[in-house]
Image 1: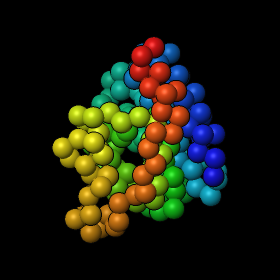
Image 2: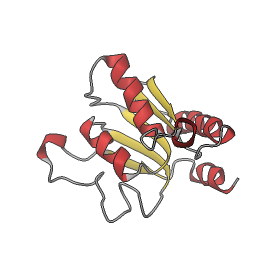
Image 3: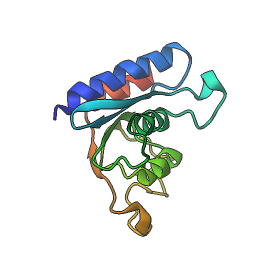
Image 4: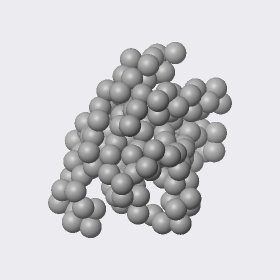
Length: 145
């Protein structure tokens, strides 16, 4: 699978978020090479802290499949998912995450609460496969604009 292709699409979505005054984050859910969900950061636009790009992509993919189990799916995102999004990702059983840049303090991988790595919550199953740094420079440039 061409991870750069899908990450460029996430960068386009992040640009739309930025244009409307939201944080520059875009996400896609891909299953069998087909986009089944996309999300644009919208916390400011919708005055809703849960309107994160990853959650919106998961909502759309779950609606498309009529199922919350996204096993086998790949989530692409320009920025490391936060702790809240990481919980939703684990609950949805997404198999692979492709991440542009890490976010540190609030990330589900690099914070003090690495939910993306947790293997103690049995109903989540095994942690997703992680691929970091895909188009890292381009994703980092979104932050510094």
